[in-house]
Image (tube, rainbow, N blue to C red; front, top):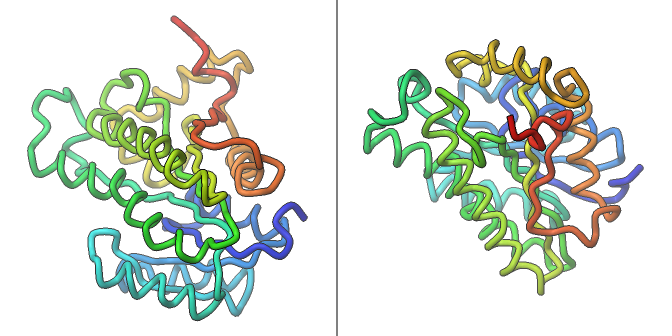
Length: 255
């Protein structure tokens, strides 16, 4: 029960195969009381069913990270439901499908701006609203990927966005440290999610990791979720500004 008595907001659950949902399940298992967001009416029912499977009383709020009014309303809802917040999970990322194919060179201005706003700036926008609810301190965890550090062919603009996200983690960690709020990134190896399948060549990525990673396998969703629980819990009380890799060691390789 590493998160017993703690209240958290999970932003980015899309379906039962998403990493955010795996983290939500692990956090609930460890005693956390959770609130969830959904984007648009299309996802309201499915996210609501998932949230309800953990706790029928789980608060659920509409949240589009590009919409200031919805962001404000979501956190007002969290305040009214919980009064305070102990942790926040950022699992939001988006890039146009055509930007995740072929070369990085043809990246459009609109595609660049959208990917950076949704996948990177959203962490800062969420933190701005979460911090006032973390008067006693807290933990913020953002999901990232190794493509932020090294070139992953066809990951393209998402790699650039994740690099900006990881830099944001460090700057937010510096700003929020005096408030006893920790900010960390969680860099998962490739996991079979619906979002991941939108990346051209994703199956090849998994085969390469399995063949070359020190552990000779791909990471499992449960392992990523358990690492997130660690970062959200008091067991990681001395860790902030870090990017924790959960990828069976793949990131240590030079070739």
